[in-house]
Length: 100
Image (cartoon, rainbow, N blue to C red; front, top):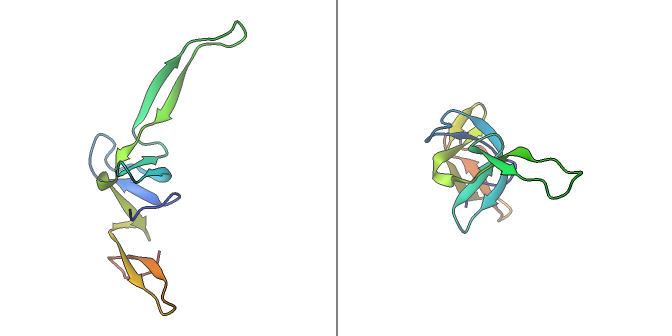
């Protein structure tokens, strides 16, 4: 998977199109990512003791990795790989050729 935890991405498809956020978690087996502030769902919790109160929690649900693009220098770009001079595999922005 070409996306990593901590990358800033923009949603390109779905109900949250245009929103940007940081990747909180990557799920490579399902080809999904969890983005902070995107695809938020409400979950109701009931109280388990007299001291605890019931509440409504907002949680981020996974979104398909194909529905987000990496933000690099203010614009979205595809991600590629190349081998640098030391023989290491590095990620590059396809639009500019810069290392990410």
